[in-house]
Image (cartoon, rainbow, N blue to C red; front, side):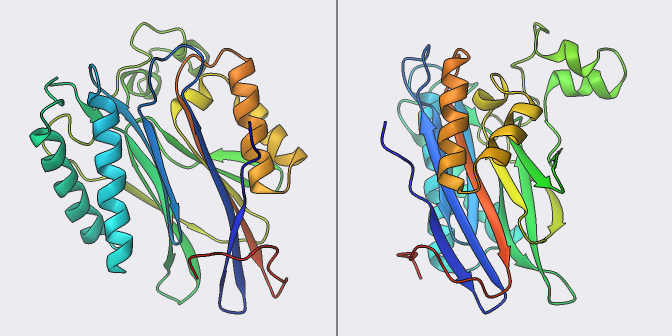
Length: 264
């Protein structure tokens, strides 16, 4: 498997972002229903669901509409909602998306300005794909899963350790396209030097613990190397689902760019 290329983008004099994204069918699935977009300033992962080609249609339609939004140059809550509305229409009108369960998760982050003018991440989420923040040698889950087991955990009926083995572990409560349009949850995160974000489908978190994700971030400063290491480990641990992830690294200050970004 070829090494994943890390891209970089400088934002003024004070901020540089480096990132890499990778997706794999896994070892047990017949096709890849995941999709991702890693295009400054938006980084998102979609994990499709539905019979036949339904999940692939849902995830690709969502990513394509968000990509068009980036082309338009305006990334706001309203623009995201409009893109998702168009994606839902695409999904419902597609001749192969006949299953009522056809839909996709969506999670990720975009670079944004806070009210005081400082840079921040706006993290968005629908479903059980996740965004993690690695900071100060700790890994924090930024998003909250929209899933049956998360509701059971929140109500104290099961422990987090029991979630993976629960019979409803794959049942999500919100998705793009599965019913009427729902808005993402949003969380803002400030930027600090050497922060890393990991945006991933549950194909990664089924095979790697939080400690495992943090381990590979510790071992690999370069986002492409970290993404490849995590993908390889997920496949070695079983690869039971499609695996998709984006790794982002924040570099504050005037460090020189390590690689040109073709999208500047």
